[in-house]
View 1: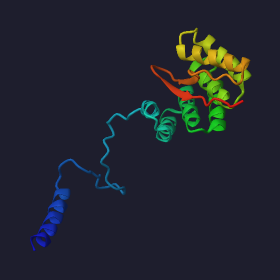
View 2: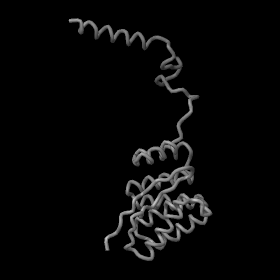
View 3: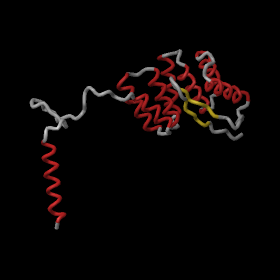
View 4: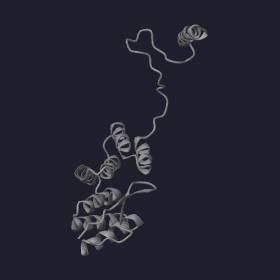
Amino acid sequence: MHRHILIPVVVAATALAACDNTGGLRQNDTSPFAPTGADGQAEYVDGLIVGHRLMASGEYELALKAYLRAAAEQGVNVDVLSAIGSANLQLGRLNQAEQILRRATEVDETFPPAWNNLGVVLMEKGQYGEASRVFQLAFALDSGQSAEIRDNLRLALAKLGDPAYSAPENEFRLVRRGPGFFKILSTPETP
């Protein structure tokens, strides 16, 4: 019996609270649009940062969505293209990843992470010769600073010399601008 009385009271209290001017949803009296609760002065979270965190946690589809949002907010630049290509690679969309990463290298021919990640795609597609050349270019552009790029080049050269090569440490690594890298495990081929 008390429950039937309590529900209308809660609904009425909620409706009255919504009418109270507590700084909640606001609308200009002359606006034809619905009220907004978003503060126009609030800072937005960079889609690239969100995407990088999602990639690190293995949420590749969500990372791709964050990267696409970053493209809409920042425009299409080498960082965004490289990130989108890397997410597609992690999702197994090799052709899309290759196309996007090639575009990234056209936008900025001096960006080592895009070249490295393109090399990883080429390795996954079995194009060892081109992958080796791409890793060499990435290594040269990076001035040998990145251990990940150096390791990828070493693995690619070994794979080029012996396509059946599958050392236990046969892992190619995706790299991005800033700290950190993403690992992609290369599946060893069976002879």
